[in-house]
Image 1 (cartoon, rainbow over the protein chains, first blue to last red):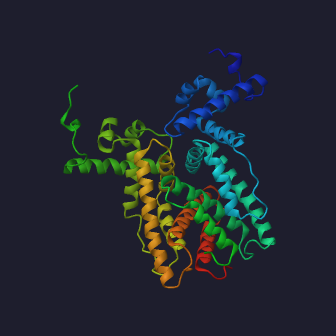
Image 2: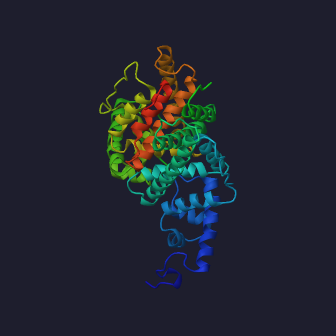
Image 3: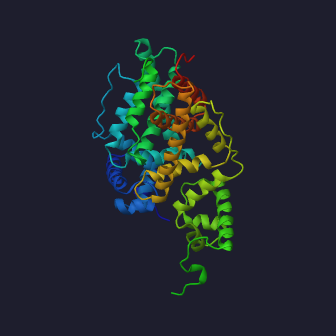
Length: 205
Length: 205
């Protein structure tokens, strides 16, 4: 076997040309996933649609799973996802709702997210597992901080464990979005509002 | 093309022998999924592991997606899933926790469930979509009834919309289970207990 310079072992994307090419492939892959979804697919099929060789895709991304993770990360970085910082006194569920709305604006992103989480729960997908575990840990940490702040300023019941509140709000937001995507009569915004009112304490009507 | 009698169009599993064969394949498929997970697979690969032809699998189940739905349904029907009716005065979240515990006792079932939900969110999986939509609708309806009963008996805040409570509790249960499976330090039981106490009203400590 002869190896062309491009095939020689080398840290991925180390050189400017490699970085540009990797980005180009990633941009095309995002378009492909937005159109066709992330399920029932293979690295070979994606390579064909993106217009690169299977070897090139493996060279730049390693595996289908790693490509999916990168597509999700890149989509989140895109300027189309406008990062609005939630107001300092906004409730935890309201902050989650804002982030979820932004994600839904990008075609295929919510579907890709649920596919990555489903992969992460299987034993044989270390990249998806790392991605999902890190994402939830970061979200819980950020949300936990926000909860502590809201408790200190009297906007949230002080008798609730911030760590549990964070996990609960993230779970409710993810789960309600799923139910709403499958059945638009599910009022996921009203349900998150209700959770917010329960967390604040006082009457909920 | 010649069609053998077995290939002739005929409602699937109409005859006793066909029903027995279908069940036999399903039982084997459940073992296969419990061992290997439901991701990154194909009808052809499963046929090989189960020890039937690809044509037989297509004949009995139609598609990979329909086979996955049947494997999930069948696993839920198995006597290993002991169906404990929750006590009449138990809270909504406690009831969800019981059901979730029972599912976790079957290897691969939680993973298969998350895969089916992820498939359902894509455009091109009608069987998974129907399954997930029906399941959530039935769960919300059952849970909504339970909430109304608990409100009538004074075990749950009367000022909460039962439909929203049902959607919220199901979402929280699904989402917390996902976080806990990825990171065992997430105390999903304590978070569901907290939600229960919020729904009952009064102090939560």
